[in-house]
Image 1: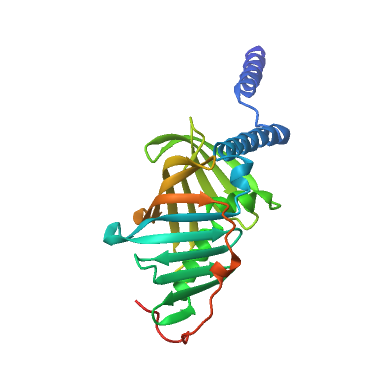
Image 2: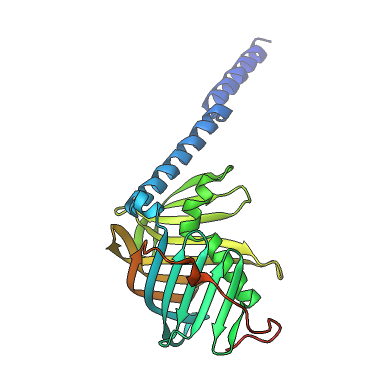
Length: 272
């Protein structure tokens, strides 16, 4: 009996020691505090990035005029020698692209509409081209910072230090209330955005696609650091590069630049 009692007491002591050494799960309040700390860090990094881009001067840009050369790629391989372009953008959602040396191919996007003008006339934009454009605009850096951050239900996540485009960066993800997300890679020293990535599910084949955009060769324009090189990737393959020769802001672009009068039957195949 004496030995049985001794073993029983030793068992209680072992259980007590084991319980004491087992980490207690974090309480709901502790988890909430960690989540809030993470959100605050993400918010601070995004604010640093906006300030690095020019602060209110950047956020209050009304219109953009660009001239440069654009290169298309298919499965990462270049297609042709590139095309000269002139781009005019008026916030929030009007854009005009003039392509080729003669500027005789014009694409206009406004709100949710798209138009293409060639020597054959003006027609509604091809639905696939329009869909791709509207998706890129919705996930663009300017749109995310100007619109998403002001929406209810936005969530911010700091995801640590990483390397992107051969630069040391801090990774931040912004999620909206529709469960759409954009991940930003912010350079650790300059606080300028280096890369942006987002994914979307194709409604036809239900496959998930990933699109990246890399910003490089920043130069100050009217007090606003501006990337003169922008490269897009689609599912890991380079899909487009743009090199800017000149950029200007707030020129007071006229609304007439973004008008289009359809003169070609929309049922005809688009011009090549």
